Length: 314
Image 1 (cartoon, rainbow, N blue to C red):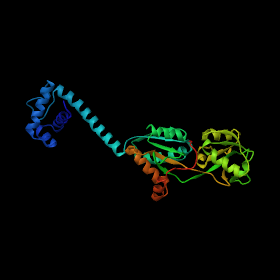
Image 2: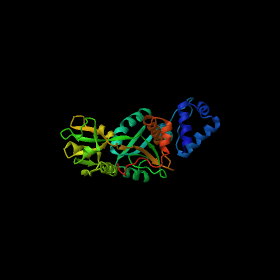
Image 3: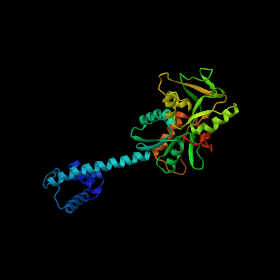
Image 4: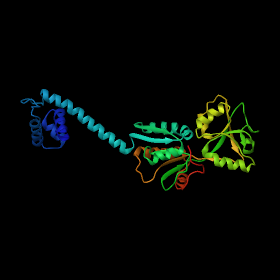
């Protein structure tokens, strides 16, 4: 029994007679009658009670009607789901992110996206930047949110405006004369907790200030570095966006690093020459809308061959 036979049988039962069902299906009445006769012969059972002005089903016909109703509902639902996936109204967005950028951007972005497209779900992987790009390369994820340089030969990218790096310190171990800023030279002899991705730039600025920093710990874990500061291990170099990961209990103090500043970049990347899901396209469009100041600026950033100046990392 084919789908078209189910649809015809369902219409006959729904309409109550062959004539109305034929009009509904836009077929000739004799042709529909012959189709129902062939259906009975193919199944080897009588589906309709004979001699009644209105269609009445036999026990076999009633059982078939219940099954056909369920099957056609599943078929319609499947077609609708597939269509919605194709239009980006359903499906799953697979996203990889580094800790600080993800914590700062994703909650608001996902909430807004869910309000607009409630049938789309998310799968999120958290890793350091190079690992996020590896997951992009292997198609584990469709979109990556990193602080890592993105090769324009391999990736399409959107670049957010840069954010300054901050020195996070325990309130019992403050550094710097200003309550808002700390100069590079004021970090001399201070125990520094340093993310690997900014180590090269930081060392250059320290050398220009005439000293080599006392690096007590190197770690690309934003959360681990903040916890180390809380424990009194030292002073950590973190992006301003890490502020949202810090508990507001007054234990930690953030000061902007100046003399000179070191800037961090956040990059949204996806593979070139790879077909994204429609939902992923909608997500990227919303990212542009929410976080990029102007379409012109976004286009210029997309054309940038290498994003950011930091070394590989999360």
